[in-house]
Each structure stands twice: as C-alpha cells, then as structure tokens.
Image 1 (cartoon, rainbow, N blue to C red):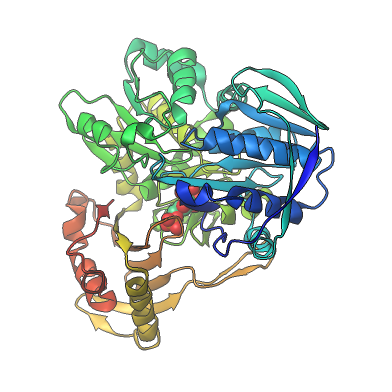
Image 2: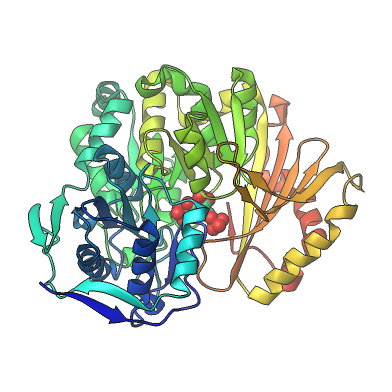
Amino acid sequence: MQIETRDSTPYPDQKPGTSGLRKKVKIFMQPNYLENFVQSVFDVLGDVQGKVLVLGGDGRYFNREALQTIIKMSAANGVGRLLIGQGGLLSTPAASCVIRKYHAHGGFILSASHNPGGPDEDFGIKYNVTNGGPAPESFTNAVYARSREISQYLITDSPAIDLDTIGEFSVGPTTVQIIDPVEDYAQLMEHLFDFKLISQALKAGSITLCFDGMHAITGPYAKRILEEKLGSPHGSVINGIPLEDFGGGHPDPNLVYAHELAELMMSPGAPMLGAASDGDGDRNMIMGARFFVTPSDSVAVMAANAHLLPGYRAGLRGVARSMPTSQALDRVAKAMGINCYETPTGWKFFGNLLDAKKITLCGEESFGTGSDHVREKDGLWAVLFWLNLIAVKKQTVAEIVRDHWKKFGRDYYSRHDYEGVDSTAAEGIVARLNGQLAELPGKVFGNYTVEFADDFRYVDPVDGSVSENQGIRIVFTNGSRIVFRLSGTGTQGATVRIYFERYERDPQKHGQDTQTVLKDLIDLAESLGEVRLRSGMDKPTVIT
Ligand code: G16
C-alpha cells in the first residue's frame, strides 16, 4: 500500500452550517471536494496516529463511495482503528453512542439529515468530537478556514473495503472493524427504559404502534428494537428499508412529509402511538390517535414525567431548549425548581451543558429531543420514552398532553417555513427587521405590547464562547413571541422560518385551532417582515 500526497485547490464554499456541510450530491462529486473537506478536518485534528474514529451514514446516495474515500484518507493520515457500521450505516444517535462507548477520538457522520437524497438531491458530512456530539463552532470555523487554503491531501491506493461483512480488515496502519450498527445502541436503550413493561403492553395489545422509518436509517433500528426485542407485531414498522433516495420521499418527520403516517393517525382505526424519524434518525414526530404533539410540548411533557422512567429516576439536573422552541419547557423547569437554558438553534450548543452536567434533557422545535445518554438528539429514544410513558401512565397520548396543559397551561405554537426564497430577498427581510429592532419596544399592536426585540446572542455558560445573530426575537409583555431566522440546513436559496407562540392558561380555551389563535401574530409578522411580499410567495411552503 502506498500513501499518496495529491495536490488540490480550495473550494470557497465549505463552511459548515447548522449541522455540518450540506450540499447537492453533484457539488460533493466535484474533483477533490470531499477530499478537501476531510483533509481539512484531519489538519485541524492534528495528530491522529493510533486513534479510533467512527464512520457511518444514513445510507443515502453517495454514502458508500464517500466512505471508501474517507477510509483511504484515514489510513493515509495514520488513524489506528476505524469502527464502521455494517453496510456503511449508522444513525446519528447510534454514531454518538458508539463514539462514547468505545472512547473513540471522534467520527464522521455522512448525512444531510432530513433533506432528500439521490443523484440530484443532497449529501452531507459532519465531524463529531470525543463526547459524541457535533463539533463546536470553534472547530468548524477552523475547518472552514483550513479548507480555504488547502493545497494537498493524503490518500492510500488501497482497494475498496467490503462494508457488508462484519469483521476486521487492515488498510496499511489502520484496522478497519465493521460492526453491527444497531446492537450497541439497542443495549443503551434497554438500560434507559422499562423494556419488560413496554413489551407486555405491546404483546397484550394494550398499546398499539406504527413507526414510519421513511425509508431512511431508523428502519433497521426500529425493526430490531420495536418488533424483535419488544414484540410489537410484525408490520408495526412501515417504510423500514433504507433506500438511497428514501423511496423518492422527503425524510423529514412532519405532518406534510410523513403523510402516510399522518393519514393513518387521523383515521378511525389509528393506533395509540404514531411516530416517525428522519434521514439520519435523530428527529422524531410523536402522534396519538387523531392528535399531534408539537415537539415543544413533547420535550415539556418528557421533562415533567421523566422521573417515572428507569433511566431518569434520579430526577433532572436541568433542561435546555433552543431559542425558537416554545416556553412550555420553561414552565416545567420553574415548577421543578431546576434551570432551563435557552441556546441557539443547533444541537451542538447543548453539548457543553450536558458535559458540565448542567442539564439532563433538552429539545428543539425542529422535531429534536434528547438526553445525556448521547450527545445528539435521538429519534427512536423519544419514541421509546413515549411508549414507556404510555405504559406507566396507562393513558392515551392525547390524555397525557391535555393533563399537562391543565397543569401548566398551553403554549399555542406554530412554525411557518418559506423554502427556496431568493437569497437577496431573504437578506432584505432580515435587514428590514433589524432596522426596526431599536424602535419596537413599547409599541402596541392590538392586544400585544412589545417588551423587547433583539437579534439573539448566546454566551455559553460553560466556556464563555459567544454566538451572535442567532435569530430575531420580538417578545411581548404577555410572553407571546414572534421569532424570525434563516435556516442553516437548506441547500437551495434561503429558507425563512417564522415561529409563533402564545400562552393560554385557561383550560377552557385549550381546544382551539392553533392557526386561528395565532392569526394576530401571523398578520403582525407579515407587516413587520414582509416575508410574503418580498419572497413573492402567497403562503408558507410548510406549516408545522
Ligand atoms: C439540524 C440541527 C438542529 C436544528 C435543525 C434545524 O438538525 O442539528 O439542531 O434545529 O438542524 O436547523 P435550521 O432551522 O437551521 O434548518 P438536523 O436534523 O438537520 O441535523
């Protein structure tokens, strides 16, 4: 085996977004594009001689080819051992679990998450660090800086590795170990939840379930855990085979893209729990029969009930949510006398809080919830959490959430996405909003008085690092909010997200239609941001 040093020239666009580098497959297939990024990561990592790295992806188009390249580059850079999921597969939370369990130095996860896959669609790569979580901004900024000046990369001339056979291979100095992608993760879940209780309920039919794998990574995990280990009837997992193009679907678990599940859950014969996960298995959508649980409510309900489940009996140290996530979690934290931290969007911001043991549970409005068991959000974990909760409380999903509202009040919440907006128009929207921030406080709009308005700035309470410009908040004196931000995960044009929130304490008023309750705020957002006007769209592309 020879190590080759190949010359290359930089690409200007390798700045990682909210979660790694995401681009169209065709961009990743440009000569040396992937290689430049991977070598930039190795250059920032420094000496990796003898160290262990984890590799895997969500199985999308280009996953296998990219893995073969990364294997050769890892060997050329002197990595000691690679742990790779069989078939090149590892869900994002499973990769985090494996990094932590085997004390790996870090790992590459190949995924564009909830974005579609296929030759004309998206691919992505991110590096996770020793704690199993996404690399912090200081690291990704250094990688980007390196990618702007890179002039060569290292690669071996070794043949391709058989990714489908469990076992060990050698590539020069590197031992390549192909591992079962599910087992370590399944064992961790068994430790956190009451599998015996859940299994009894599933086998007796007192809990019925449908899990939509959306032809993405969680299919094999869900089949092994829900059907084989817990005994949910065969067929409880639908769309369970991972496909390179996700069967032509959009692997984003929301009411629009997980429509097969959504229709089933709204039908008369709906099971008790409906759930879906995204491309790489870190997101979750939870539904009861004819009932949708917003992700913001989901994390609040979880926090209020965590002590009922084996892995969380000791109680919660604290909780955290991303800034645009509703304040339902804050109310639970207040009642429990624990801290609730508000972070920018992006799971990486929870890592320090989890490592410093300031929090146990955290969540985001973007269908992400997780805990200190790994350092990623975790789709199947959330499903198991809800299953365990239903089994303990012997209530339906709707009953659990309505009881929660009775106790804490309801945060009516919705997100409106305008996808594929012209980038200049999106910048204009942001500039227009920024221009109004100073004069908004004290202004009255109907029933709403602006308490403060700002562009969210986060100072990490653990390491003091500062993240600026994390979204525009307009907060009213009654606790209602409008938040505007540009997505950091899109690959085409800009996606403008507007988040609306209104709190209602009175249980008599908890049964209203969300969009109707939020109408005043939605109209106000348009007059402030002119999103519809400037984007030329007459309505959002997705409402959740
Ligand atoms: C990623 C991040 C999440 C974030 C989400 C949405 O999720 O890990 O923390 O909330 O993007 O980000 P944006 O609003 O910028 O599009 P995933 O599932 O895509 O990795």
